Length: 183
Image 1: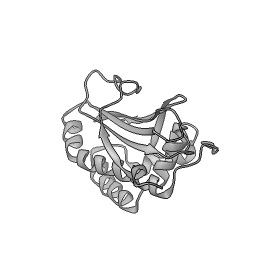
Image 2 (image 1 turned 90 degrees about the horizontal axis):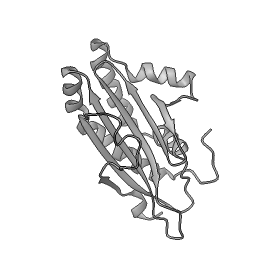
Image 3 (image 1 turned 180 degrees about the horizontal axis):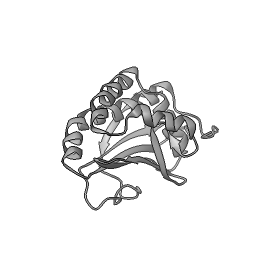
Image 4 (image 1 turned 60 degrees about the vertical axis):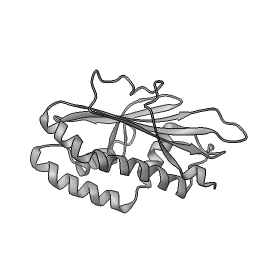
């Protein structure tokens, strides 16, 4: 597989994404793109499930630290959300609630007392003999209060590292094929 298929690029929030205008105001908005190789699936739900099931162990460690810090504030923990996701795989992808799906995009997220966020996994471009299809993962966050704004300021650098590392790792492992289904 070409190194091009491992390069993650920061891009503008895609205007065709369902998260582009989901909130009147945002406290964080970012998007990262990676090229999909020829033959890879463009099913956004399958790709989202694949990305979040292939995360590096250091991400779990960071999430454990995050959980320990936020539990005292009454915020939802990844451990709590993971247990909900294990029971209800049809309406969740890992720790994330599914808000909508289409042929080219799945929108995931969660609402909490400090902030709401939406995460988009969007496939763009048309398959061709040279590839040129891209997967764009976008995140938008709307904070409700001072705690939310402080929280997002603290975790934003880690969030960006996690998204980029998750996309690179999924590419290294090998994207699901177009013949595979999301279930």
